Image 1 (spheres, one colour):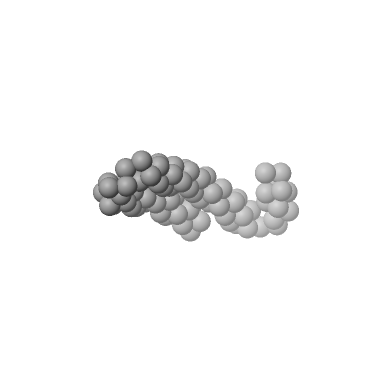
Image 2: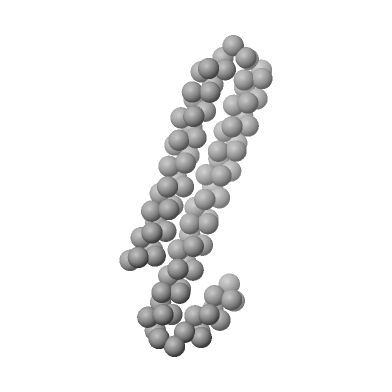
Length: 90
């Protein structure tokens, strides 16, 4: 965090300082937005594999539900990406 402060402090133009701070904030926001879905997808897949191992005859239904869960969880990462773009170019 101190590195960003040093870079912003060295900027000669106030617009450059604003752009640097916006890019740093947007990058951190997207990084934080990607952590949750990454953990969620890992948890969903792990539990689905466990369910398929316990009841192999229900593997098709479990797999379908797993892919739906992954899609909904990945939507959170896409929302984070949209917020990243809005912060960067707003």
